[in-house]
Amino acid sequence: MEHANSHSNIISFNEGGQGQVSKINYLDVKKAAAILRAINHKLRQSIIKLLEEKDNLTVTEIYVKLRVEQSVASQHLAILRRAEFVKTSREGKNIHYTLNLTRLDEVNTFIKQLLNEA
Image (cartoon, rainbow, N blue to C red; front, side):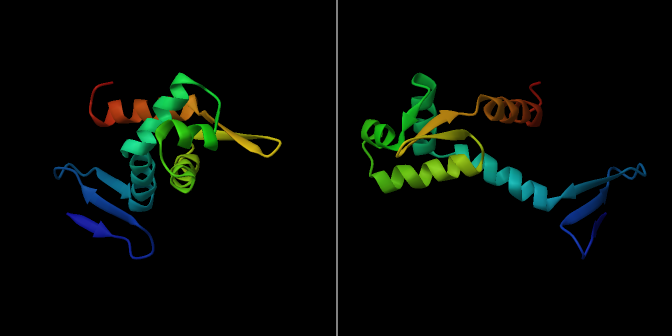
């Protein structure tokens, strides 16, 4: 049986009638889905692989290597940055991108747990 809380994005449900109530915060689910969507895209996966090979790249180096427009590379880097998969540092006029390995490890652990592989 489900009970929706009208003041939040939380839904409670009774697991198997055992008296235990579990709650799912759908706002958190939405945030987590956005993080997973950030890496569930071929171009963004290519950017991550590129940064695995060479840790510190500018947007120019990225779009040239991937043969895409600069604006396309920038848009996808912004998505990865918002999801905290890449970190930036400024050197003069250039912004350098590196992988946030801690974040990638966190997501990898979460996925393994979700798939019951941990």
